[in-house]
Image 1 (cartoon, one colour):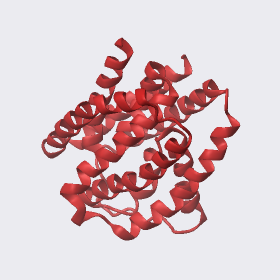
Image 2 (cartoon, helix red, strand yellow; image 1 turned 30 degrees about the vertical axis):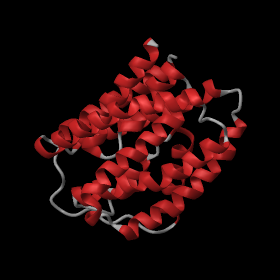
Image 3 (cartoon, rainbow, N blue to C red; image 1 turned 90 degrees about the horizontal axis):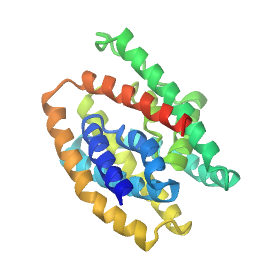
Amino acid sequence: MQNQILFFIVILLTNIIQGITGFAGTILAMPPSLMLVGYDVAKPILNVLAIFSGVYVFVGNYKKVDWKELARIVAIMAAGIVAAVFIHGLFTGQEQLLYKLLGVFVLILSVQGFYTLVRKPAAPAQKPAPAGDGPAAWGLLALAGIIHGLFVSGGPLLISYLTRRIQDKVAFRATISTVWIFLNSLILLEDVRAGLWTAGTLRTGAAALPFLFAGMFIGSKLYARMSQLVFMKLTYVLLFISGLSLLVK
């Protein structure tokens, strides 16, 4: 019971960040959630909560969604998610190894992301060159899909692609939030097929919803009033701590 309460607190705090950035909530929540409730509970619940958080942002910002980019992202990342189903099967009974791999992945992303923010604390005056549509960009999206299929945590890699495609922060937040609606619905179908949605998981998921919406509400208010740069730095610090916790688990 204590672990479940801590799990709900993690959902509240990480969805405050999700409400601000549009992407960081699940990857922040996954490492502590794995330790508190385990993979078979954390993954399906965090996945469904990400669908709700995506809908929360989409409802108020649907006119700003870049539908062309959305279609490209969903198509390529969906292929990665399908590949993740087979990759996860290779690690059956070796979940600890998966946790370590996620920890390394999160640590690399946190260090790289924080360094970029510190080195360039302000956005450059010139518009960055758009990301290409060639194999490198497609490979990045496919890898994001694989990571998302395994851990519901493909956001940071998708960010690497999308920051060069959409410059308007409202359109960026609206588009990336809508991506999770489509992709996480695909993961939901796979989780149901795999039998992860038990009666106990349903009860825990339903109990987590108020914490999700409270976090998203607070995050949306902070998004409108405070510097996003400060919260991005905080996000990367928390990512580093989360990744380190998985490595010492």
